[in-house]
Image (cartoon, rainbow, N blue to C red; front, side, top):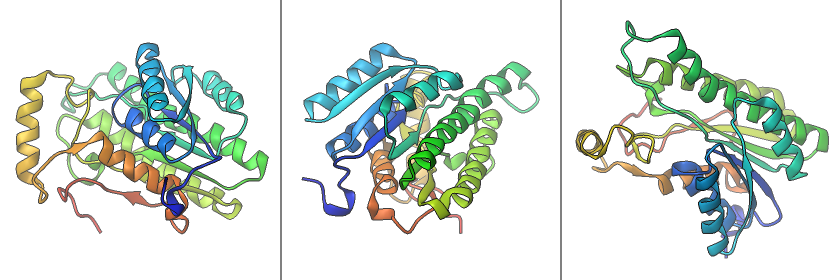
Length: 254
């Protein structure tokens, strides 16, 4: 039984990037907290795996196979939900290149998913909430990469910085109507995306990040899902336009 401020019974959540990693963990946790979760991703097989896990936990999941860069498909998913109380824009990709080696297509691809995809999700969810006249919570996914220089991650960190500004602006615009908008900026999290270069590279990176972190570990997807639940629930009812940083203490910005 969810603790009262975290109880999402009767609420509907749209979660992008739900086929794996942080999106999957968030879908499971929000469903366990009582929400009906609409899971969106372009990975159909992964989405059905997530839906099965949600079902095994006693929750309800609806699958939407879509690419977040397609505004019409995002709009259709929001319409199909019928009502949106929570939107978590988690879908994202990473790209590694130095500044001088970054190509136009690299920048366009990463910004299309990591910024435009988040923008479309936020826009369509906010429009639905405003039209319904109901309060709501929107959670975006920023990154610890925006708090320090991030060699090799220009496209990714720049897009995530844009997400931070989107979050603050939308929070200011919709706050008077009862819509809260906050971001999660994770540190290094063990997910399929961060392991994209193979187990050896992942092990080396995690060892380095573990040494840097005062808590002496890297994060798991479930660590970030708990932050998403907090921002989606009434537990954070007096928070908007904020950046929550579950990062093990690697960065401690004011």
